Image (cartoon, rainbow, N blue to C red; front, side):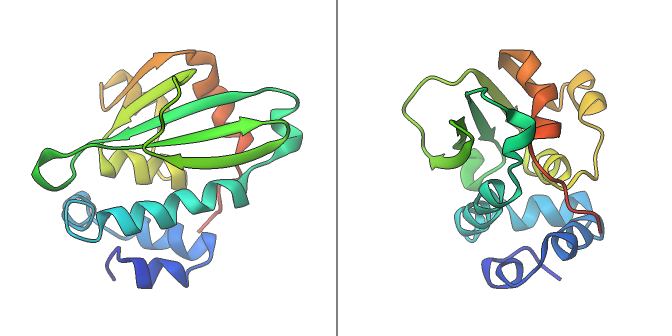
Length: 149
């Protein structure tokens, strides 16, 4: 099964996790390096508000940029996950400065959001680069529900 907008639209959280888990790194790179990349990323980021746990974030506010490398022609896509007043929203091509900026490739991104990778190991190996409030990076893991496959 491929990562395309039609396929992932109909998947539950656990089904999406199982799909990513069953794909090779090469398949993920190929699928997120092609023409459907923007639509697929839009669908993945649309899950953030659904998986947000306001009770865990409390009264904290944060703006986290995800700079995703590996697009067509080595392009980079940036999405901001904005937590404010107990809500979560997503902005494509954000214009405000982030509290934390994470730069990562498509494989690392999908493993991070599906809970199928080890974020600390990816960070130590340089596969995730972080700038800004690094404490937010650890908080993120508790602020969002990660579906289990």
